[in-house]
Amino acid sequence: MTGLLNTSMETINTMGKAHGKQSEVIKKTISINQDIVENIRNENEQFNSINAMAESNANDTTEVATQASVINEMVDKMTQLLKQDNGTY
Image 1 (spheres, one colour):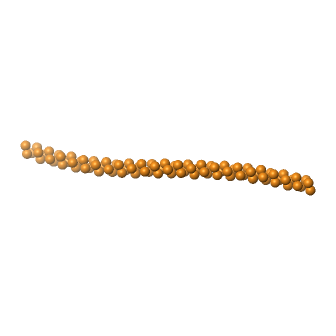
Image 2: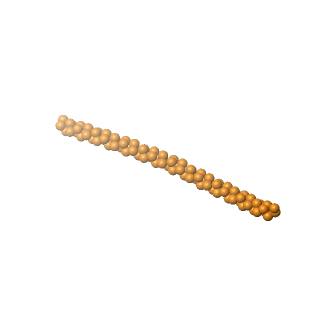
Image 3: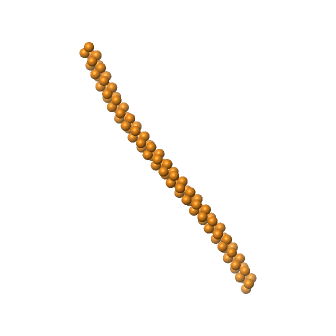
């Protein structure tokens, strides 16, 4: 009986150690997964920041193109006025 109890106690202790190791593996896995989630969040924030900058650059480019068009129209008008003035002298 004592021998069986000792064997049972050893088995229980072995199982306890195995559960302890399994618990550590699970904790490490959770920690790794949390790191992955944090990295994904950081990458997502960086992507959003880059996207916002790209949109801003696109808007700025559109604005510059509009201003260039207005300047070209003004130059054309000035050229026409100069041609008219040269003709009247």
